[in-house]
Length: 540
Image (cartoon, rainbow, N blue to C red; front, side, top):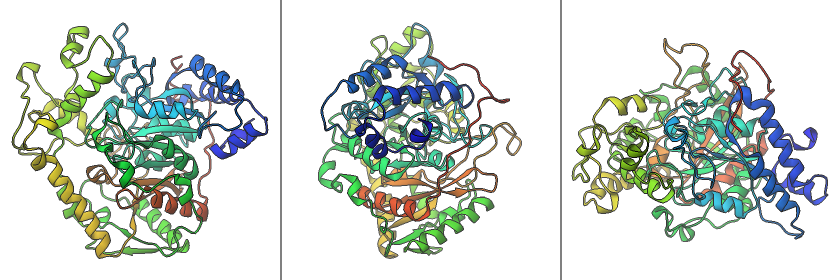
């Protein structure tokens, strides 16, 4: 089974099923055994659903239909901020795991419903940092997740549990969420594929918000084909998510596998945004710059042209990012989620405090101080922008500074001034740059630095994870994908990210597939079963 199932893809797995080589239960048990074997050290899976996964597997084995749905018999993991009915929805925070007051999801998130309908077998819930507000994967609910290539190093956050599970072959596919880089940066640290779809192509209903106007969800896989298959299942309009309205008419038509052609990069033209080299936040590290230049050569060898110009989206583009003010609406998103997907015990922050004696923290609600001081509307933006996730400093900043007055988006007369207008202007800058330089898309590293060693101080302090310069993607909602693009000298992965025009998700997947087929750079990690960082038993 190890020979057949290590690094198995969805099409390969379905071929094994068609030959009756394995049952779904056998494959599911194999993945559950992998979790049992490695989760004590890597800590990727917060909650393992042995009983539920095996029940689903047996049900599917009893299905005698000749044709099955797209993900039939495919073991999957779901990130801990995404509702799976009957399972803990901790959002990484120990405050949602209090005995007697734990957040047990009463129903599935929209994407989970679609994955189940397509035949996916959910084997577990993956670890994540509290509220997804970090570039590393430390959780007060479950502890630290390590990088599968070296457990001492960071897989990044906040979808670090999912990437470590997929890289470790504990599941075939997984879900991630992304508020500022949390699918793409972590995929880059772990040599897997992480897709950020055009915002609105996939519903986020049922996913705990960090900043609901920036949040997104997408698949994490070991190759582009599996990501495309998963996107077909996950995509679709949903009345619970206003951004999905009309998406079927805007998006490139599926199935997304039809865009996957080995020569998809030939004749294409990409640019490197200048701010990647100019950033004053986290400067591009020399090792990462060297890897990026090597990768550019690979893209050119695959038939594409790559443009590097000082005036192609310089730092002024990131200045425009600061004008997109979403912090005003953080509580709005948090309360919508609790109302629709929270347990009966608490449907808002007031009920949560009454039930537990604790307050939901400002990083989640946007509210600092007493709830009695809450201002329900705001007509002007604050003098400075709210802390923008998923920077690890965000949690500390949210706790120490007064939050902006909170507003309800659909009731705020200044919503266009605060959010919609600046977002549209920033998106126009992006499209104009592609037009001016005659570009199909952009290329850049998934992070500005290699994954850091989390057992050693970094610059005199605890590591905050590998930081990136990619949160602008969330502000404008364009599709982007992270790909395995080689390895640093110490053996840790380097990731390449590609972005495209809005709603061109099929083209983006095609380019990614062309790069993957031309380079075939992914190699699986060599896992260990013990060591100094062993974290103890996992939750059953």
